Length: 462
Image 1 (cartoon, rainbow, N blue to C red):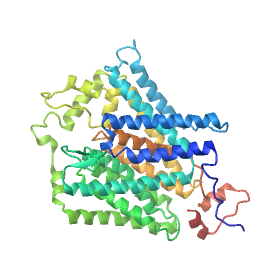
Image 2 (cartoon, helix red, strand yellow):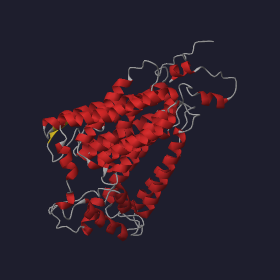
Image 3 (spheres, rainbow, N blue to C red):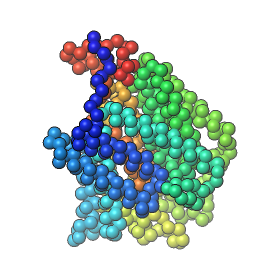
Image 4 (cartoon, helix red, strand yellow):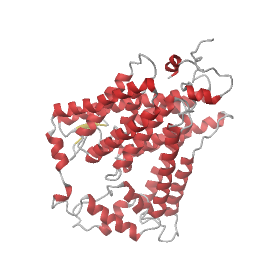
């Protein structure tokens, strides 16, 4: 039998097409590392950097089709959901449309349209650039370990005071955490990157793979920072991530790797020990805080905002007030004295209904239904390599975490968190070329003359 080690691939720089492909891949990773740093890219200049970078990558990608006649555009059903959403927002911008479809503030909707378009570009780039299991693994390695580094900074910053440095300058705000303006927004980021670290903390690629310890440490740091952030929605979402990961991971794990999977119990144990050592009293006080008890917040607490948002939905039921117009629509239904400005609904689902109406709500519900059905099916499909299944599991759990948090906050309105949300969806639904064939069941189903290798060789490929 010939060597089991696959031949080394051709250099990615051996052709102009390969150079473009590699440039796009590196560009996506660098941008993914960057977007959480400037306070979640919430400021105009940082959001502009994100948008311009994505459109520049799109232009570079277009040259790939110009010089390579064999290049093909990969399209998934998610693209059609994006096109439908872009079409709906485009209708809100068209002059002469009926009042039920027209935006109440075309300029804000135009800005929202550009943001939505950039996210659609991000998805297209991901599914067309991350086309191999090796590249998918590189994305997980980078973002999982980087998430641990960001979490470590957040823990250090938490004990050094309220000031924080990001994007080369200091920011002083009411409730900052890590590189984010708000602790809840950091929690949204942590919920999405924690499963990326969990994936390689649980999945043993090969015997003696020492990298697993780094991902284990990264996962512990991320969950510890998530708890220290004091975000109650983040705590609930973190629990949902762990439950989702544990339930589906056990279905993927074979007998030889279940012992490795059981090692994940170290994460909650170590996190609990860290919280106890650092002091649990502030967290208990935070848990007992009731925003509705304050007379100052009587009319701007979440329940009041949600009640007023439902009034917006009742008034604009078909297509909403216009994408991105919530901050100018809300004052008309504000029941407070107007001293405090409300820019977000603190519930992404209600804000979607307010800005896009029932049409947008049905579109989002249809997308989520398709996504969960397709992703869970791919995770449990033994014809897919074990490594790809584990990584898709990590993406699914990150999406679940943010969706749970979206019931009580507006993480999808934060550019960097919206970026990561779309990134995870792209990684979960991308059709990747598998680098190995580690699942014996898959080889038996494939038929032909391919030889089923002993279990000891599975670890070589995994």
